[in-house]
Length: 232
Image (cartoon, rainbow, N blue to C red; front, side):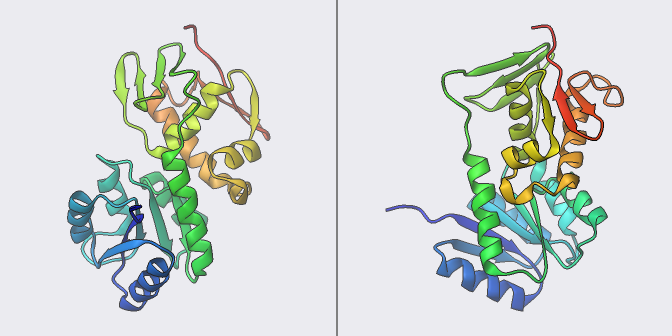
């Protein structure tokens, strides 16, 4: 029997929880919920959800801190739901480790589409004909999804990993923001340039010797980015 995808809902508003639970169960998902971040961490550790859907404003532990805690040792996709739609808040959530951000109020069909998208991305594997990608001191094992820089393992979120693989797979090519957003986030995200700024910044901190003067991921002003291959 096929296992239902598991969704952990983290929200302290009972009405939101009821709406989400009803909609997700009706569409074939298995759900659990927590009304605070501490309980969410315990459930995530014991239940292993496929996606975590969390609010930002909660008692005790904010959604941002929950994202950071999850990202410390897990690549589970995280979708943030919040009434705060300002770009600054979205960037903070993405920087904390969220994979997507949905502004309340939202339709259940939109949320379902976002869930399908993050699940697809978390399952995506590059072509098995090439198992290792390398560039300079950067090495990506496509089977294990392990990334090393100068032989040191680098922890990446699922989205950071997908973006890096796309960059390394297109060495020396100028990639527009629209191209990168479409390839990594999907066609509905080609206007979300803040997503790209956040994740490029995160990647640079993790793979560049000096993020302020990047050698790998180079900005092409007003266009996008270019991956500059190192000497393998």
